[in-house]
Image 1 (tube, helix red, strand yellow):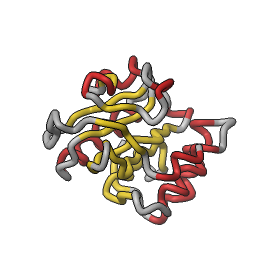
Image 2 (tube, helix red, strand yellow; image 1 turned 30 degrees about the horizontal axis):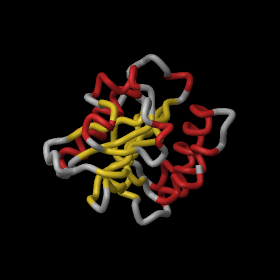
Image 3 (tube, one colour; image 1 turned 90 degrees about the vertical axis):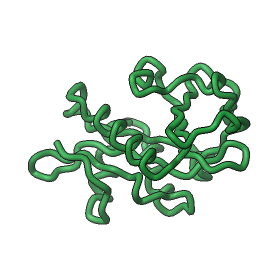
Image 4 (cartoon, helix red, strand yellow; image 1 turned 30 degrees about the vertical axis):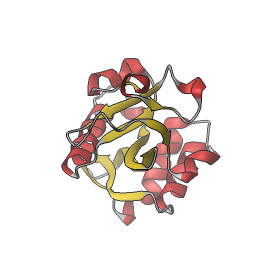
Length: 167
């Protein structure tokens, strides 16, 4: 398996992998397309996992988000084709995107997901760092991962890129 940046030739495969990963919901595949067209799109943080035949088997992205008015990142969706679950594809993608985000001097990454899964990557519940989820009901699953450029003054309400508001 290789992790690399998304290319234009990967778009259809990413859509297929995301649709398969989140079936029967089409919302996440549509969200990735909408994020790609949004000003919050960050091409350097859209990564694919490919197998030995260069077939896309997973995808992750981070888009521009904000805590109060400070720029941060929102992670997701993370998609792995069901045929490749439990093989470390998702973990490799998360490690790669966090490393890339840190190398770009981003301060913090936030996501909505299973704390049991994301804890291994250093994510903690957002309230431990004073970051408020867009919906208070998300608090048991809304998490943040401070990166090297993080400062404790980074607190307040979190806002994803605009396409997330339509999911």
